[in-house]
Image (tube, rainbow, N blue to C red; front, side):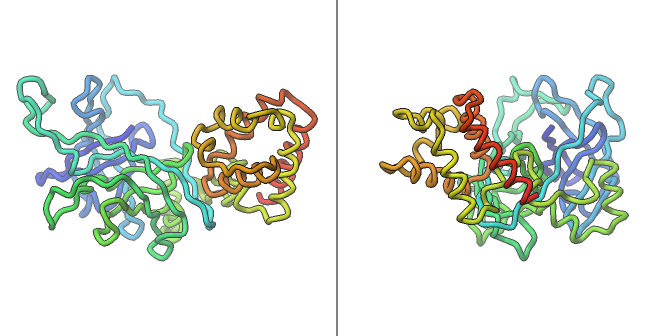
Length: 338
């Protein structure tokens, strides 16, 4: 669950994610210096709102990483949460579709004091949630150890000395069900449409073994991140960037033999079921072989799209010998690049 928390007497706010029954993941600078008294707020100003006092259970300035422990969990709150999956990203020329939810400064709203209330009384102002649907070009910001998250820009109406993204720090960055980073900073020079998130892989570079072990006990972080080919849930989506040209053409030729694709508008029907965006983005050619190759190159640039294509092909083919051939090739190539 995404959290909004008020920190100390200054009323600072940040974002985070509840990774276990009693622990919340956030950025270290959100609670720096480590505060002794703070409050975490969930579902702010919603019917299911609840709050809890918390303390800093883990803190690393080098990794810009902190865990908060909820010290008084309300009895009615769920206590059976499973830790999220953490993952690295491949060191390759790929662009990932990602998402994050936080509470940035530009989402401050004025409220009707007669209709909006919270545990603190009537509200005249409140900060709403911001769900960003963005992308990460993996090869950016490698030296800094961050992910460059491209997002829709807000209007810059908070003045030259403040960022409209203040309060977004601590939000988990998700790709296909895995946390790959945590929002940390808005570099003004990058523009209003760029945020920087510390990569999960960066934690393994700057944290010692005892720190990783402690973090793992609280949040489910594995002792070692999986290899890049296996690091995210959809293995087939991550296969394409690793294939050499000959392997990519071998896969192309196998897919081009599928009966469902050799029918009129067959490829469009499959892609509409898998991901409607691919229908418009795929190259068109009079040769099905070249159309399939163009589709694979498109999926290669946008990991996460190939897995649904394979699932749609299986649905259309219903166990044909041709789809079994494609599956044998995928199985062999996946095993090669694990």
